[in-house]
Length: 255
Image 1: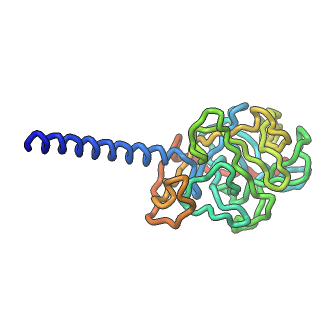
Image 2 (image 1 turned 90 degrees about the vertical axis):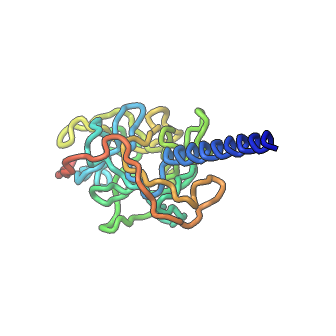
Image 3 (image 1 turned 90 degrees about the horizontal axis):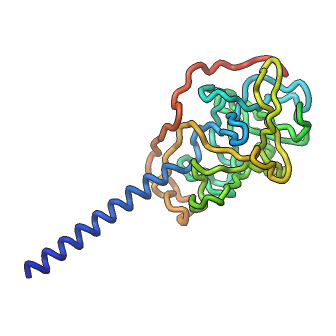
């Protein structure tokens, strides 16, 4: 009887340990995904620049607020907030972003959305990428981008993993956010042109979630198979990379 009780306790203890280990592993891994409401920097893998904007307008094309790439990792003008698409597809705060989801990226400093349209970019004459929207961050369908995950490395379970390279496909024109390597002169000397190109654009169209403040997934949204359930607790945050940038000064002028 004592032997049976001892074996039962060992089995029960082993099961509890395994359960706790798996729970910790799953919860920890979920914090590695990009979530709605997070504020992040996007790093272009071909040219090692961060997606950037500022109060500098294009001197040609649309004349809208310009979007560029900068090498500095600490620049506060490179933060973008992950938001629901203009169609309102249900990207609630703390929800993991799925591969294939359509979303908006809103520039934190100026409140304008990453945007594209049928204007030519100033240097390469590809499709122009700008920052667009009113004072409340509302623009139009040209602000919508679809997350295309690179699944060649495996993992992710259909969610946008922070360590996974992705492409952003413009929902209206189906062109990809891209950096070719061309650089501007004054007043933003050395910054890279960002455009949208067809056919994937090679390595210049791949981006990685770099520094940022990431909203932890909601308990009700943790399982990829559970769908977008309502939040059951207030999301917490994970700070990645430089965390707190100084400055925050805006450029001014026109290209």
